[in-house]
Amino acid sequence: MSKENIPVALKRMLNFNVPHVKNSTGEPVWKVLIYDRFGQDIISPLLSVKELRDMGITLHLLLHSDRDPIPDVPAVYFVMPTEENIDRMCQDLRNQLYESYYLNFISAISRGKLEDIANAALAASAVTQVAKVFDQYLNFITLEDDMFVLCNQNKELVSYRAINRPDITDTEMETVMDTIVDSLFCFFVTLGAVPIIRCSRGTAAEMVAVKLDKKLRENLRDARNSLFTGDTLGAGQFSFQRPLLVLVDRNIDLATPLHHTWTYQALVHDVLDFHLNRVNLEESSGVENSPAGARPKRKNKKSYDLTPVDKFWQKHKGSPFPEVAESVQQELESYRAQEDEVKRLKSIMGLEGEDEGAISMLSDNTAKLTSAVSSLPELLEKKRLIDLHTNVATAVLEHIKARKLDVYFEYEEKIMSKTTLDKSLLDIISDPDAGTPEDKMRLFLIYYISAQQAPSEADLEQYKKALTDAGCNLNPLQYIKQWKAFAKMASAPTSYGSTTTKPMGLLSRVMNTGSQFVMEGVKNLVLKQQNLPVTRILDNLMEMKSNPETDDYRYFDPKMLRGNDSSVPRNKNPFQEAIVFVVGGGNYIEYQNLVDYIKGKQGKHILYGCSELFNATQFIKQLSQLGQK
Image 1 (tube, rainbow, N blue to C red):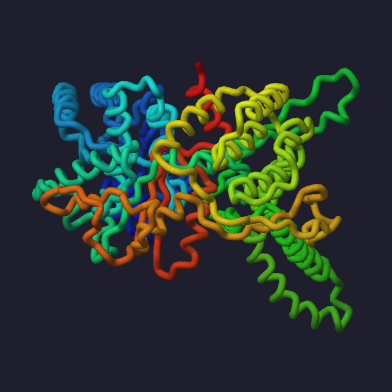
Image 2 (tube, helix red, strand yellow):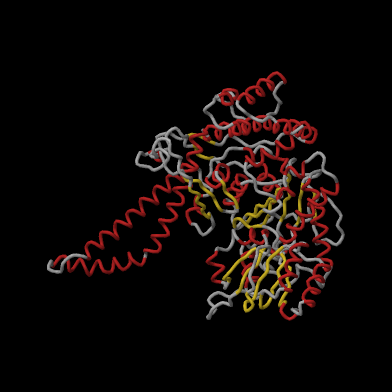
């Protein structure tokens, strides 16, 4: 299962759909890139502006912006095949904006729309200028080497709320499912593999499975035009063994997306504005030192890209936060040592030549200085990353302290793992210093979802009063109550494994006072590995384990001629490759849990995908809309 496919496919497209060869001599062909918002979202997490420039892209513009003609330059278009996009492209042809046009559609374009473009090209006598028209099948967004989401534009169309609305019509539900299936189909075309599909019964995931199976089947049946024969990007890589696609429904586990978290990436997503691998921070510029009565200074906004190129991020995004704080500190110290060494050498170089000792030191140091100077770019990059992570980690730490997030995280872990609680839930809800109303609501919902026995009406009223007094909106609880009553008929509550965190001594190494991150008052919790429900389901199906949780999962093999549905897998061997896809939204906690799970499995790969990626705030908002009377 090659994660290289997606950037490779994009580079091939930007290179006029011929494979992009590295180190080819000569300048690239200069060209402009025209995309819509969908195209922009797909490209931006994967290719930096510098990489685009290296590929000859001098300008990248939105399709629906005002663009001036550049008649001697070819244009590469990367857009969805929508009515308005196609109208605009036809207008570009009529206005003869560019020298030639390479039209790439993110998703397959219909015959009718192709004819519209052909007619416009004829009318504008620009037929010869339309160089190529391609369906790229790239209608999904890759955020990590092993993680993708369906869309960012119009994501409310496939949101948890859209799928679970009580008043949704059959036609609306069809549209939601078709949107999800179209993206998943694109994903497998890019991967160059036909999966074996497993899904739970009676859920939205099952509807996706049935439609995807049908779409793959139809494509395979058309031998001439099948996208899965011969020259696909991933063909031959894992062709001997097909991947497993596990489709799960968000409703099997509603506690995890509400859970407070303790690992770096998940915390950044939970408490900061982190979106398509970019985090936006507000820097408070000192209000204290402004004279009395003066307006507080404007807050500066800074944004940072957190991508696989960033070595520190790659290494630590899944680490518990106190470890991250410690590592930033260590990086800073090693950077300072290197910087001091360069300064010291520079001062020695300025010495007069009389001193015998200095001369011999000089020849010695020249070599050292040369190597020090040649490592300067590396040193500057190191400094940039340290500054970036110092800022991001400081912003996260402010939230942890202000909202006592460590207390919430530890308490929720205990609830989810059915450990005895050392403090009453009412105490935390009623504590004005512990967290925001939303934090309290999240904690209570997790308690309510995880409880074997729902609290008695009298207890519930008491909780509701405390939550209302704390400023909480009770709509999400309204929805979870209905959901739980419905889920009770379907199955028992999900279990979350055994206890997980154990606090380390507060005076651990992170707390040394020289540290930038003074973490006093913050518990240094150490994570113990345990599998979340989605990981457990994957493990059962990937390893072919028999388990009541997954024994009645449906089985689809689009390559079988007759699609007779059965839960009996024909394949008895464990899978090496798997994709877990959560219909109804996913989160970084689940993703990280899968990453940690697969670390121990030699030679196995998994990818995590979801219809949208939300943090707890966004999820609570959807639950609240569902719970409105």
